[in-house]
Amino acid sequence: MSTVPGGYASDHCRRDTILKWSAGTGLSCAFLTLYALYMNHMPLLYFVFALWGLFFAIQVPALEALFADSIPQGKRAYPITIKYVLTTVATIVGPCICVVLFQVEGDSWNLWELQLVLMVGMSLGIPPLFLLFFFNDDLAYENSIKAAVVSAKETQPLVALEAPSSASNMESEHNTFLWFGPRHVPYLLFTSDFIICNGAGLTINFFPVFFQHDYNMTPSQVNLLWVAQPLLVVVLSLVCQRCAT
Image 1 (spheres, rainbow, N blue to C red):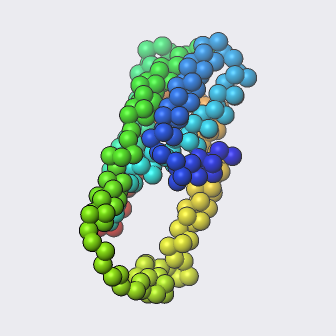
Image 2 (image 1 turned 60 degrees about the vertical axis):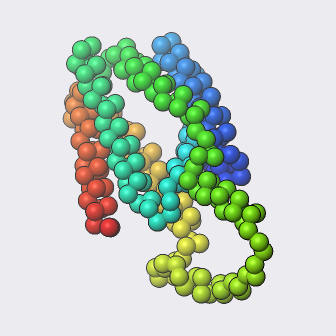
């Protein structure tokens, strides 16, 4: 519900302003999550999860757009791959910390131990939220180039412009596949993400319960699975990036 307004705001408002608002929302969510976990207040926890959805709907489009604008066109494949790899590797740190905490506190499905691990993880996620206050649209590469072009045009004399090429010629310069062209990319991405997110929501969230009841796996063993999966994703991502270049 909030993703479409968040994407619209990223296109029509300053991204750094949106990121500051998302930082405030994220900090509120973090402290409310800690309180709900400590007090074992499930209704509040459900409400906070909804707020986290609002946070990601606001933060992700603005941050991704600002990241893309900070890289020259035609040179974005490698930095985006590196960002994806680093993000995936970072997801390994959480399960590793969970394994250590479970080994120290007791490797069993105990409510307090689970609460403690969640609170430690939530506390580690608070400092990065403050970084969202320090982004600046004016420092992005694409925005600085546009400002330089506008300044150059204002100082140059007027010259006659050539007639623009036809729309068909411009369209033929773009890469196409079958009947799909550049204008179809947003719709294809939306459809892909919609299917993936719905499929993940119906499966991944229940994996720990499945492994616990059907295979009697301990919390540490389940977290080791979450360590192995991102590692495989990182390796395959680097292989795909190498094959694409």
